[in-house]
Length: 516
Image 1 (cartoon, rainbow, N blue to C red):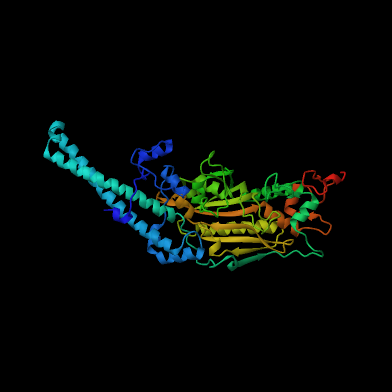
Image 2 (cartoon, helix red, strand yellow; image 1 turned 90 degrees about the horizontal axis):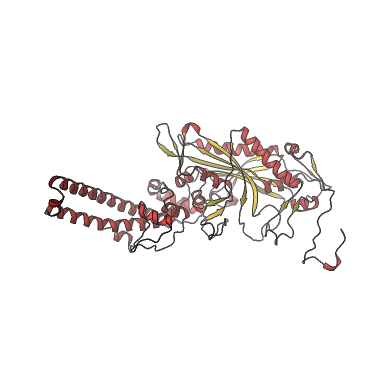
């Protein structure tokens, strides 16, 4: 039977499709005697499914099984959580699972047929006569035997599903044939826009500029809001709102619908988007599990927007759907020596995100939308007067969900280097297969949509570029023309009010405070 396939089989109470088990789980009840949970499930999405909230992810296993070597190469080139031997184990487990499911189907059909025979027997000779007949006894024994076999198969099926989904959910998307292979340094420059600003003085960094203008504060905040936090005040805060409004207005004119999303999202939605909240390298902030089970702070509104469509279908005539969302993003950036100060790598920031849902009728819809998103990014940053380059990112920079990805890097004069200010990715059906986002095609058949995402405005990175590239010799900063209407001025100058003076316990020469 199925036991040799699985090896040692453990009784489980969480078999998929068992309604009673789902009810126990949802109500927080102890399972009946004889049912135990033999290990913790690491996948938030799989756990979400087992609790009955969604159907099983529809992974493209026919493609994986038919192109094992291609998938292994793709996994190795993208350097994610899995390796090529994991792919072969996934395929083996999947084939064994299909064998068990086929056996279950045959036996369930036989069980149904025996039930119909018993019902027919009772109707023909009566209930009392039938229970004492040899035919009834034979049918009952056959039914009992099938039920015992099915119990073992159900256990095997649940065990195989656990093994399969614990790995298969971390398979990456396929990769665009034009994507460069390798590390970040292998990215291809596919466009260069604008000219580098020239100065007749040594340009300063944005933090020095901001501190002298009194519009950025990052010093002495570890006891207030922790490392890598910051305050924007005056013109910097106004610039933040101006950038957001500038992008929102432009995108609404391009057919985008504005949306606000939750900042706290279930781990299952993150995983469905290709972001793994349970791996050690995760940059997500987790909410206290004693208060909110499996809730994380979103590092991008892409997750909330994908969650909006989760387990829903849209109509073909309404596609593509383009959404713009402004949100606060939270990221637990690593505390290393790279960029320890300034706004380049911070724990929280405002971002305007583009998100698109397309059909997959001819296979080019999502690629066209990706190009539209990149075109919008180039238009936005050109109007801000930035010098930037567009990069096609290599395989190791795609993460799990992206089929193709472009980054935009702006010149930052104070840093004397290009810095990433946005990215745009085509995730094809990777997210929709895991989150069950569908559309009805021309024949009213449900098919998986494609999803595309892109950054319109990441406020701190654009503030860096604007302050550093538009600084003047006297320390003032010119405001880009398209933003001047939001600030009612064309130059940021030092405010007339006096700055705050630190009087805390860590001041230098505490007994010699200077007068304000």
